[in-house]
Image 1 (cartoon, rainbow, N blue to C red):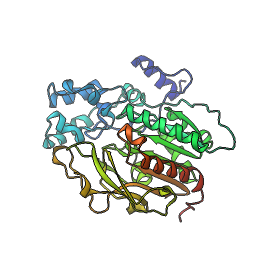
Image 2: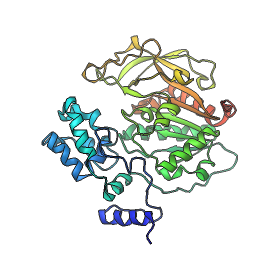
Image 3: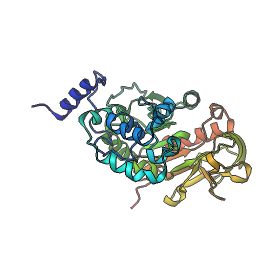
Image 4: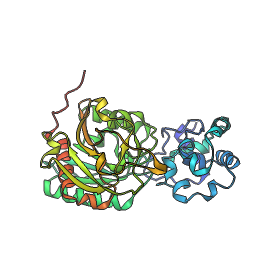
Amino acid sequence: MKTFAGLVLAAALAAGVAQPATARPVTDCPLRDAPFSVDSPLVDIMLSPAAKAVLEKAAPGRFSKLPPRFAGTTPPTFAAILSLREGSAMTGIKAEALPAIDAELRALPVTAADKVARCARYDNEVPRFDLPKGKPHLLLFEKINGFKDTPSVDAARAALTAMAERKGWALVVTDKGGAFNPATLRQFDAVIWNNISGDVLTLSQRRAFQTWIEQGGAYVGLHGSAGDFIYFWDWYADRLLGARFIGHPMAPQFQDARVVVQAPDHPAARGLPREWTMNDEWYSFRTNPRAIGATVIATLDETSYKPVGMMNQNLRMGDDHPIAWTNCVGKGRMFYSAIGHRPETYAEPHNVVLLEAAIDWAAVSGKRACPARR
């Protein structure tokens, strides 16, 4: 009798999806069995001939004219972080047409080939690391299924590599979600997500990461790691990050803004002035992480730039606009900074000081900062 994994592997081969020889087929991707809908990631609809036909009927010729980065099915692709509901404006589909499209999509069967195609952007490859003793161990994670801004990813990696050399940290890099298993995670003091976009972890990898964090691990997130319009993992967006992205300025996209330090006594703010001005792409969020108990390290002064997004979207958060914060998640620690779209930001002196102090707190000095909450 064939196992389920064997059946999936057979379907993958039939569908022409390559499987790494050293890894198990991925069978537990988060949306594998979910019905098609207007809230599905657009990539899953584009991967299915039947689902794509529904969209072509609703907007003839529109999807074939979308730029590949928006409708591509090979990661990284915007289609992994857009749903039809979120992206309907690009296709000319009106909001009132979505319920009928949704009903037609939900009526489609989710086939074995659909499940294989959905899981193909995940991996089970477990990297091996040779980590020296006596140093803090940092894992720099770079698996990106959504939007990948290669210059910023590369600049962040270079800056963190230089930082690790200065500080005596042991830093290793992987783009494999398979690193998120209990045995591998136990080797590390902190995991740094380098501008991660798109859903990247399987269900078992999610569980391993969440458990590791809650039992005392540490997460550091850079810029795009909280910059997706839609998330398919509520714990990551609402508990780990504590904020959901709504947009960034487009008039212009990059602007000078005043960064104000709100927690000067926190170790993550060590060495920073009370304020500074720098140029970047400035994120706004639907929710304020203070609502779940976060300590805001720095905010933006909205009077110092124009928080206006695409189609004159109002991106104002008011007098309290967090841009970098820390929090306890069980016994674990998190730090997130929304600074970091432009490659130049990773050489900006104040931002370098912020990242160095925050990583040191997360991985080394702050290990007792988060006793388990009752």
